[in-house]
Image (cartoon, rainbow, N blue to C red):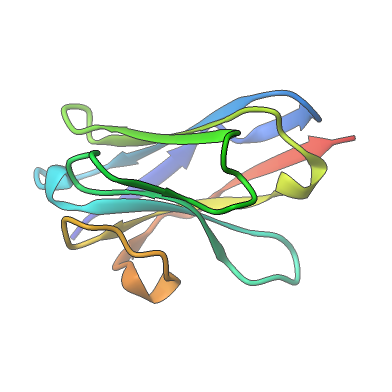
Length: 124
């Protein structure tokens, strides 16, 4: 069992930056691939970025490439999402998720554990 707790969301102006963190419980964090998803009101929960268990492989949705960076610190049981050049369309609840495998999935159903989410609001 893995418990995930996100933090770092908030209100920011367009062009600004935020860094989200996701702290995981348990001693086997380094065995889990991790993903960040987001869900805006009335929309599906979509993948934003993902990272393999070792951190050696990453994935980004086209909409965030070049602006967002996913990383992880296995010693701290934490995965991060650095978000730069934020746009109003990035406004959503952001969720981290853990996949019991070394390689990430880009699909919501590929993840076994979810955090409660953190709200990101970007004003224009």
